[in-house]
Amino acid sequence: MTRRVYLDHNASTPVHPEVLAEMLPYFSEVFGNPSSVHAFGRAARDGMDTARERIGRFLSVSPEAIVFTSGGTESDNFAVKGIALARDRGHLITSRIEHHAVLRTCQALEGQGFEATYVPVDEYGMVDPEDVRRALRPHTILITIMHANSEVGTIQPIEAIGRIARERGIPLHVDAVQTFGKIEIDVERLGIAALSFSGHKIYGPKGVAGLYLRKGTKMVAVQHGGEHERRRRAGTENVPGIVGLGKAVEIRARDMRAETERLTALRDRLVEGVRARVPEVRLNGHPTQRLPGTNNLAFRHVESESIVLGLDLKGIGVSAGSACTAGHVEPSHVLVAMGVPLDWAMGAVRFSLGRSTTAEDIDYVIGCIEPLLAKLRQAMPVGAV
Ligand SMILES: Cc1ncc(COP(=O)(O)O)c(C=O)c1O
Image (tube, rainbow, N blue to C red; front, side, top):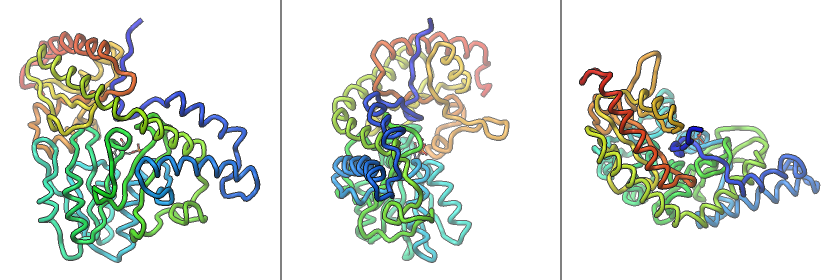
């Protein structure tokens, strides 16, 4: 049987068995509507309250500051639109490497009369806080910069950006979908007014997420309806999902440090192993200021899709750094913003490690990459991509 090695944890993670066990009763026995006053409803609300408390404790914030949503995408939309639309007009600052949930939301707001500046990044995918300062205008109403990039893993200098935001009294939203539960986040020290996070990146369920909102942050609801979530986000809550998210966070709080050390070592083992055996490979992203389990490797003059498919045949799951848009392959907006040359960017592959990853897995992957790349490069004339 082919070995199966999943190295796409930045895309999604399997639900932790302890998370699943905690969720199960909320699909059947504890099914009440958490807004109902009777015992059935109260039991569901208790489960939700526990989750809110666990997340509040993890972030050292009040549980009431957490709003549950349907995903990181909704959290980003809610934060950016909610803060912008609480003002009539204004100027937003974001970066060129944000997730599309932020980028396209900013673009949509531009279509509604708001202005936006998309600050550049350096060759490592890092935002310069001074660029954020230079982008400030008298009517800047929001700064939204991600904590770590999902494709290359570079961790942004949020504390310095937070200081700038604080000096000017401008709310800072941080998309922490890729860092929440993976690295330390101190929202107070970092100067964060709103923080997006998502369940399925941390061994919780899909379709459930949250937004931390600092008390006093001026914003409006984006989804209207009932009185749920203190009137900040209407709709009957996904109780089993929220319970699972809370449990996933509790587990991350317990395991995060040890896991960071282990994954950093495995991450570096992969880069060193590939570099030692495969010519013309480069690491995209910051050499050290990078997520513990994320490696974006570019193989020059090879199409990333061919590598992804070749590794898939060996039971290895990774993702490409390019996307097929309307029938033609385009490099990722992140790599373009970093100035990665096209002949490298088209061969970018992301390896994202997680809980189940072992040193044997990494060695197996390295062993598969070497002959695959040799074969692909033989089949493809140099400079063909
Ligand atoms: C940085 C970042 N923001 C937002 C999202 C969207 O999260 P969700 O899949 O929960 O909608 C992702 C998912 O990949 C992400 O990596």
